Length: 187
Image (cartoon, rainbow, N blue to C red; front, side, top):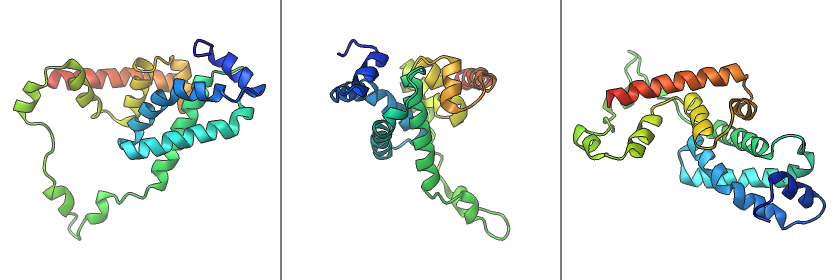
């Protein structure tokens, strides 16, 4: 069953083979968890959101259009669930700490948590360096790059997942690569 394509698993699941849902969950759990983690940056929140994603998949399976890609569908659910979670999470903006003169005591006292030169020198692994630089990208660019290079989605699939035009996705990809190159050159 592990070798079956998503379409076969879904068709048989909808015919009553309940065990096949577990195969789909195993197949996509890590991918969805990693994707959600890129939005939240929190292990605990990512676990909760990933669990919620699979509950939504289970509840809405009968609504799934089998002519479309299951992978794209589940990633769309993950993206929307992560965004909903982040919207519900009430964050206090730094601007709320501005005084009458416009000075911000929080920002003025923050310690620079960036790595010191000696630490950067010790990071010989290209992967570590790339991950460090990727975190500096805006979420819009980082998401497109990760979906394309880590999860191997096409630009059309990414556009569908993010509910953006394919031209927007291509532009974010191009700009993200350009920014990434610039950041890597600075290192």
